[in-house]
Amino acid sequence: MSKNLQAVRGMRDILPEQTPLWQWMEDRARAVLAGYGYSEIRLPVLEMTELFERSIGEVTDIVEKEMYTFADRNGDSLTLRPEGTAGCVRAGIEHGLFYNQVQRLWYQGPMFRHERPQKGRYRQFHQIGVEAFGLVGPDVDVELILLTARLWRSLGLADLELQLNSLGTPAERTRYREVLVAYLRERVDRLDEDGRRRLETNPLRVLDSKNPEMADVVAGAPSLLDFLEADSRAHFTAVCDALADAGLSYTVNPRLVRGLDYYARTVFEWVTTRLGAQGTVCAGGRYDGLVEQLGGRPTPAAGFAIGLERLVALLEEQGAAHGHGAPHVYLVALGAPAERAGLRLAEQLRDALPGLRLVMNCGGGGPKAQFKRADRAGARYALVLGDGELARGTAGLKPLRETGEQDDVATAVLPAVLAARLGVPQATGI
RNA sequence: GUGAGCGUAGCUCAGUUGGCAGAGUCCCGGAUUGUGGAUCCGGUUGUCGUGGGUUCGAGUCCCAUCGCUCACCCCA
Image (tube, rainbow, N blue to C red):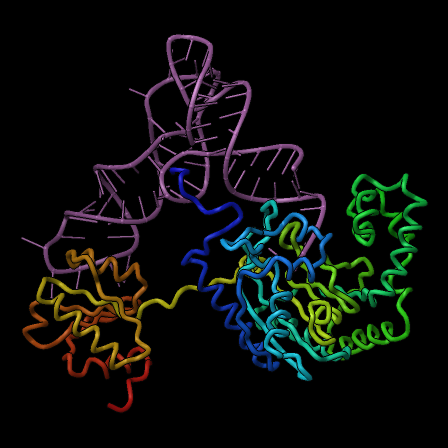
């Protein structure tokens, strides 16, 4: 119970009990991504601080107060990545991946933000990020959304709600912002404290207020969608139509605003009500200006990120359970000679049966203790080696998960017997 | 950064107006000397988050502090 050593605040251990569910989820995601032709890219966790200042936006909460930033030994200012898009764009520019090319990329890994931890929000958290570069049209926006929908289906998640909005181009948004700010200033006496602060810092967020007393002000505010010009409007309509064609239901949420400055036009979120206050499981959108903003050639782009802790929490909440693959065989070795012979036999069996999961008893102990361990390990069979078996050149094979007697099996035919009983293939060749 | 709730065994938790630190579970052993699960019997495990105060006496009351959780905020 000593408090001397414990994990840093907001950083969690994922324990062996939980890793099967994570691995299953990651496997499903990999399969879906492969099905759409996306390739994995592996990126550093550490980047130059300037990268995030220039991409996420200098006046965002993330950059202003949530980054893990420190001086390297040579004086460079480095930052643990708070999100993945910036690093992905940096890598693409650096390696010429965007030069007249279409790139469909994904990555996975830890992100770091110094926020107050709560349910679904940690200081180290994990994302799967997916980015598509070089495609201007609404078709790729739709592809990304269909990809996420397929992943939810693959994971057995049914009740996520898709919310959709268009932020327009930066120019359209600027014009809207001016009108919105004027509207809000006229009603500043009806704004709460947060609303007044946001009026200065991020006026679009005023519309996101949860305060019911501001509901009428919010409801009467001009809508960003009315400020889209023909191109943006056509883009958004095309996205909506294609989603309808695909049979995906969605809600247009005019108040949906991203926290990162680089988004433009299509933005979307997958939301659940089952995870408390942090209900956004996946969010993304189009960010056509970012590559150029970071020094690359103008390159249209769109992408999204999935919060894996939240996804796992949702899977757990819906009762998804995944155990580790229990051992096929637990080798019970009684006495020093049997322990030595058992180690050799275990290696021979692993050679002969590549898919075999065999746990060798370690730490000695009597038969009672060893069988107890075999049972607790979840093994299907106990393989028993003692003086009698050694003398006969056999091993005892006892089923632990079904009724049946212990068989005395000659070690020479043990691989074939195990292969048949367990349904695992024998090694070929050699 | 703001607010609320909670810190007792590895885990889940009781603990009375202040009076010997508890249960279940887990683990170990035995009943059954080379055979697991079910049952029965026995056993190990504590800086009661930490520091101070009040008191003859504090897990319990007071103050401070640290941690965790949830919510605000923000966001995946």
